[in-house]
Image 1 (tube, rainbow, N blue to C red):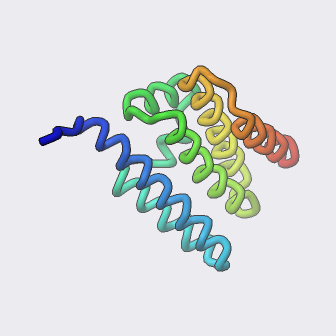
Image 2 (cartoon, rainbow, N blue to C red):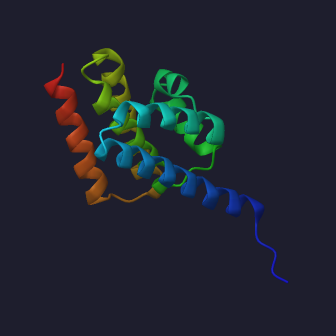
Length: 140
């Protein structure tokens, strides 16, 4: 009987949960239920992954990287978390510009950390990061 590595299983589960959260958020956004999607995503991040966006947004880049490494995030996990954070930031840019700007910066930092962890450059991440930088410049 094959025994699987428990940590490997947990890392795979983390990826599945992040993907589900992102999919649900985008689905609710497309159905015009964005505020509900953000609330549900916040709750899921907190309850299922013990990730508090308020705490996450207070981290500087090195603290964020330590957080990602401690949690055993893969570059893909960091990228998906970046997408979740950026979707939330884009949705809140009209109501709380300062918080949205901070979240956009964290989303950008997560993409940079994903590049650093993977030791490769991804054209997709470069494009997403450029898009985030443009949003930040537009709303300064």
